[in-house]
Amino acid sequence: MALKSTREAAMLAIQELAREDEKIVIVSPDAVAAARATKFREEFPDRVIEVGIAEQDAVDIAAGLATTGMKPIVVSYAGFLTMRACEMIRTFIAYPGLNVKLIGLNGGMLGGEREGVTHQFYEDVGILRSMPGVKILTPADGQQAYYAAKAMMEVDGPCYLRLGSGREPEVFPDGTPFTFGKVREVKSYGNDVAIFASGFIMDRAIAALDQLHADGVSGTLVDVSTIKPMDDEGVAAVLARCGCAVTVEDHNIYGGLGDAICEVACRLNPCRVLRVALHDKYPRSGKAAELLDAYGLSVADIVATAKDARK
Image 1 (cartoon, rainbow, N blue to C red):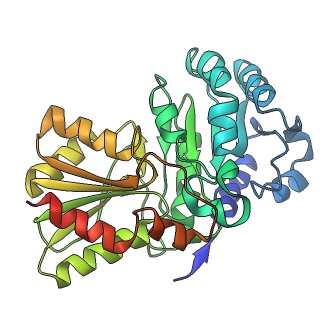
Image 2: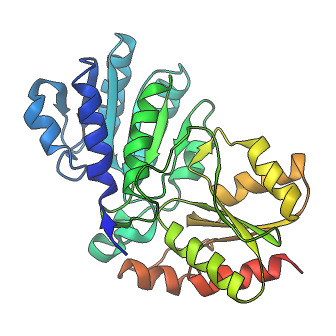
């Protein structure tokens, strides 16, 4: 399967938008190279503010810029933003509802091969889901990251775009639409079980759906690319049709996609929902595929959990 950098795709989208909107500016805590924003800096040298390794300062500067009508984007590793600068995001961006965009890199285990547990993050979605008014996008591949970055800039208020390591599987055909705030059925064999997947392990969810079909279980796969606000009606409709579900995400089992789907099920369509995620532990460093297999996110794990959900 072809790989594509979600970082390059998102930055391409932002660079294109910046040609039409001089208010777009990037605030970088020593992350221009990591975010693949070098070309943006070459084209717009006066619209990149480099603060050095100081995520808290970057968020505060972005908040100040937003009060003047600018459209700042803070780029850094997911955990450095959501943990090191957590209070600043909460108090100076989320609380006043400022139009600041956040791009978090190395979400999940995909960054583990190079940098290990200090640079791979499983808590970011859960942290920001708890902040009122913060929107969260988790696109499934590079093309979707491109469209998600453009969608992020069109909505008002704080928004977080979760990206990977830069080597993500390209799973959807060219031209596949991205709609902010809506789930999308990727593939359906039937209504035996629903699989809700989020982020850059969509290739595994697709493979699991196909394997289930080969095993006589006809399921439906749904891409949840907007974690917040959740498409409650869209999720509830799938749950009502299928009667049971599995969630798949490269994130801690607490606070992310699984909890969000369970919340919808509890309120709108009570049914059995099982979660495939990182089970409250920190994985070791290693190649991304091997880590996902070792920590319960293999295709076989998804298949087994889907079959269990039907019991």
